[in-house]
Length: 517
Image 1: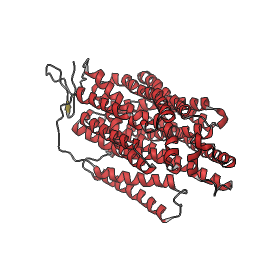
Image 2: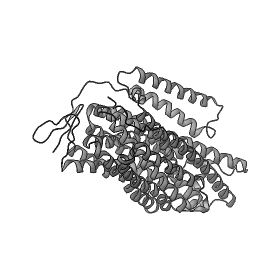
Image 3: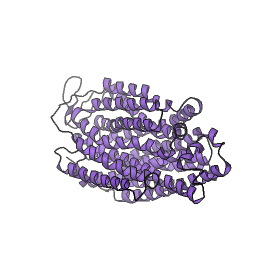
Image 4: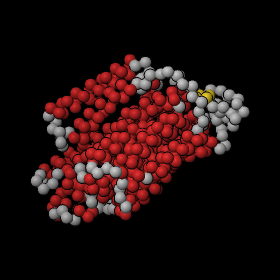
């Protein structure tokens, strides 16, 4: 068996011999079990994309508040984005095991509260808590793999990690549709509890770390300022023109808070002794380009996973189970092409592999741009598959490349910075696209003389088949037309983002960069 000495965490062979800073621990028993635990932890976050998106129309129909539809996703993504960097830094100081356990505990607490929610407000608050925990799960899982596998193994193992998305693709829609159609949407959240406990137990028992603790300061202020900025911006994007007038005092206050929060965040990160987001890593082309592309692809994937079920159920009139299966294609394409990317990386290079993924993203976005109610679920599923393929190719290229250019003591924060950009992209994406959707629906209803008969929140009824039949014919047809028009605007946005993503990927460095110390 091998051991690994990496910065502050030192691994030893069973006979006590220390094997060096960049060695690799190969334990016939431990590594497979650690990997299994890591994959199970990732599954908790991965399944959120399919199972919650499948159930959200029923959740909104039960709790009300379609205008808050995007906040169910935004709340989760906001705290995820704002804590992922802190957890990444904490893991470099205190080790991966303890941070993984803390994150899992918080995630399960949020899941439990979400399942008990009796109002949309309570659900959104619970999702805030759940998102904090998720801020540790994904980066810790990827970082642990980076620790216990060497450079040549990481590309292959990243393919295994991406298979988690395939597993969640098969189980997520099935479970989500089953819970919604036969039990209750609340089980969508409660099912996380036994899985989370099992994943945490696996890491606690099988991951061995000897942490050399050092006194370091954590940049909590940076997290506060980025939360203030992003949260204010999300309110502007989601509620602007719907519940908050563009020329209102509150809108100006939110805009001011966005700018002040961003300015204070930049100032804090430039002057903090140990910043949450070390700006110097952005000087390296590999990290800078990968993170920028991850920001835009994060906006793409959340746009597909959040709003496709609403189209399939509210516009096409299919069940939650069918809507879930259209999302399945995303998570089928993701692991398949992530595994392929792991093999291509060493043959054609990181840039070429990522560019192929970028082309898949554009192809998938074109499918959604051309999506109409008569196209049916198969057309939607085809678009989802291409999006998933593109995400698999690009995300694997970015993560493996980043981990290969940094040392151990920066691997946690470097990996977390990429996760942060995806979470930030998802948070901003769901807010931006949700704002476009709400504004378009409201404008359509007003333009067609439905101001008194319906509003954005009336879409709640449209998403519940049992309640939809009670709507007057004209109201139902106008709601469907408004939802169709609004979602088409969303898909135009996704197409633009896919083109921007490809343009950024073209700038991905061809040659190996100097190692980040």
